[in-house]
Length: 128
Image (cartoon, rainbow, N blue to C red):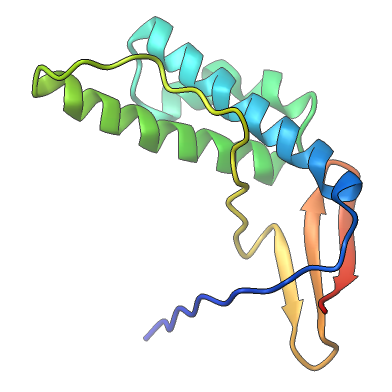
């Protein structure tokens, strides 16, 4: 059985180290949302084919995929609202939180250390 735990960690890193990655992730999220909205495409696979190369220009592969999955989920919720005849507009984010997963971060409890994937590569940081 898989056990999932959620933890809150205060990272002791300068905002300048992570902000470019957040901005690039937000840009990718917005690109996928705009593409899906314009093409009336809510399928993750076809959105992947339409946007992957563009997002890979400024994001590592796993973060590009994560942003696309997150955008696809948002577009599917928009599709549900459309079916209910609710008013909708193209989803857009000013600052999108990054969805990290097992491929994009590591956590070493014994070392009191976490490693996050950024646009500059994997960066290891001590938590405070």
